[in-house]
Length: 362
Image (cartoon, rainbow, N blue to C red; front, side, top):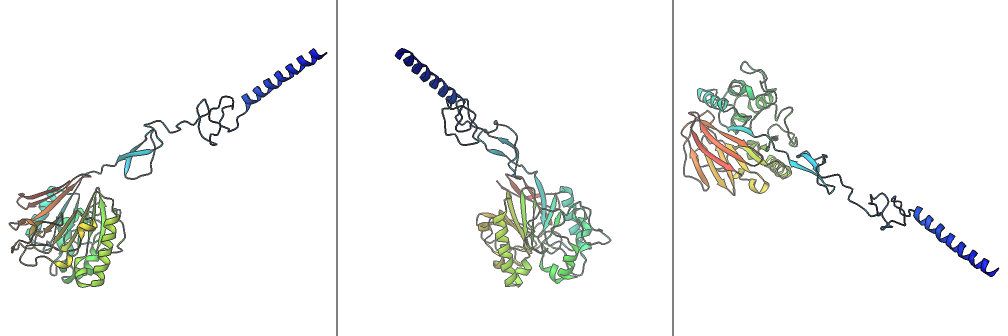
């Protein structure tokens, strides 16, 4: 009888062991899909993807899988295998521009510069002011020669609103745009700036100073006549420019206006009031006019240009100022620029087609 009870206890113990083993083989305490008898990582966080032993694995998409990092500055986004979606920087198409000023005379000299510009065929034009002299109309000094670059401009016998799909003509104000003819009211009525469909921060609430972006270049134009005649306007435009230069992510930042901060010409020369800390604020180049010459200077680590040979007259130089590197007053002409993501090149070409100066920034 005792032996029977002994064997019965042994059988009962074995049954309990088997039952417990079966229970372990079916239990999954951390809910990762691997039973506890196999699971070597019993406290895996809920939702973690695990391997056959219950331990976490890299759940990132395979390297090279297309993705979208929602960054407008990159394209060809792909996974790197470590849960990071990144892309290559977008390469902007190279752009070209012309830059001239002191031209609005309606003369044959202006026509010669316009013909030069047309032969180079830049993507856009920026001007350094004095877009009209005396009692002439903007249609006579701008529309007559540059209608192909205008959009939604004032009408006239020479140009009815412009022939460009989007505006590609971006003037700055000069003193004669204020004082001559219909004054600044005519200027504002004639131009639509920067223009419908043109990329801009749209932060100035003004057509007299504004910004726009084309390809890798962010352009900023200042109304220097207003800043020279109004301390409050000077403060407003200084603050605006400093803030917008700091906010810009463009490869290149160009500031342009009428009154030259630095100039070796004997008529006007340097204007100390316009010697703002452009380099500290982030500008890559400063382009001005007012003096009817061409000059390139190197000041505080960046190039300054005077391009005022757009068609009214040619004037003399005085004593070269510090930093002056190239001076030319042999004929009328225009500056031209070409920009890519990695280079910015400036040239000055006269109306005879002669290359006078070249300057490269990389």
